[in-house]
Amino acid sequence: MVEVFVGKTLLNKEGDLIDPEETLRNKVVGIYFSASWCPPCRDFIPSLCDFYTELVEESEPPAQFEIVFISSDKSSDDMVEYYHDMHGDWLALPWTDQYKHDLKNRYKITAFPKLVIVKENGDVITAKGRKQIRDQGLACFRS
Image (cartoon, rainbow, N blue to C red; front, side, top):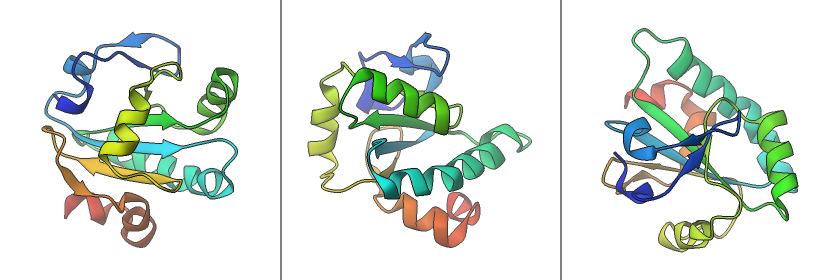
C-alpha cells in the first residue's frame, strides 16, 4: 500500500471510512491537491473525472490506480460539497486531518490544482499529473 497513508483513514463519497492499507495496495496513487474556491481546480475536475472513469471504471481489467483528494477548502462543509458535486468516485483525506499540511510540505505544493502521482512507497513518479493528463490523456498512465 502507499506508505504515505499508513495509519491514516480515508473517506469515500458516501462518507464511509476506508482503510488505505487495503484499498491502495499495489496501486499507483494520484494525490490531488485542490479546493472549491480555485477556478483552475474547478476547470480541471471534468478532465480528471473522465480520465479516472476510463482508466479505473471502464477498463478491463481496471487499472491499478487510485486518487486521493487533499482539500484546501476553507471549511469541512465546503470540502464535502465540492467533493460530492464535482469529484469522481475516488477517496479523500478527511478535512479535519491536519496531515494534509505534512503532505503539502512533503510534495512542495505551492499552487493549486496539483496532481502528484506516487509509487507504492510514496516516491514521486511525476509532480505534473495535471499537465500530463491534459496533454496525453490515458497514454500518460501507460507510459
